[in-house]
Image (cartoon, rainbow, N blue to C red; front, top):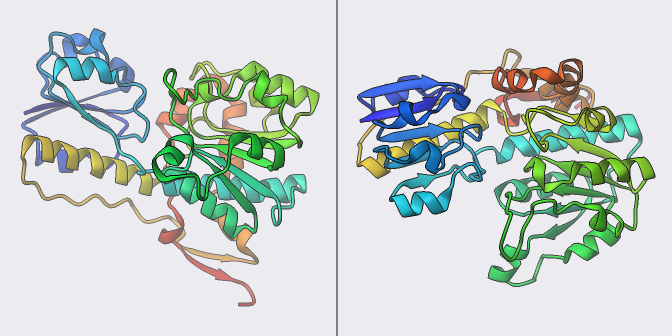
Length: 349
């Protein structure tokens, strides 16, 4: 079996060597029809467009994407071509929740945005949104959930209409897939019309897909004061991001909210598991991220402890200093560890 793999997927080489006869590692942007024509499987990230142009005439039978999102896969073409694909739902949910927790604590510390008692609106309540909602509750926020597809399947108990979130919430955070068509499109979900319906000067957070927010509309809302602040990890037209939004956002990072070592290990494990199931391979491998450099954290309070584990200001400063290096900052990102990797001692306790 021959497998072509994005060379930025971590913790995979030793495990995959026990599964495949031949493995080729290349940058995600360098997948070509010539390269994949004799491959049996691909393991990709969002930078590889898996469509007819890439796949036609190849012997590819299976695609695993080590990501939650799968809008880079032409699922209809794959269906017609008999190519099976799998994503990694929930793999980085803990990492995104960590990103949100640290960002919100910074918002409170630096902007005076008192979290306790504020209303948090979570749009998209899948694996990631559910964990973000729990972070909000732990920070003393009142949480409203909006997820029309889930509401249709499960009933409206526990869910609120989007209009209610726009009317009541102090902070809106988006955790939806990018959907361009159908009953619940999310492309430019945040646009001029939506932003003019806000009843509060909200903070907007986007860690889902850049195209969920219409950039110019958000810039106008920030300028006019409809939106008080923005925390942006994903961007339209990546890696050619809007420099004006980069400067205006409170926190601006290069699409790394989900880039914890734990999340990456989960995604790699899920991709390999999917390949083994599809090709009926009985393989045994262990994927464990490395321990943090300082596994013991001593801090005066929870905010200090969380920011020692992960401080998004470092990523924000790096991107603002070199926005032209968006892809390099993302591709060479030093993966952080999540809370379970640390022992925390709060002074005085």
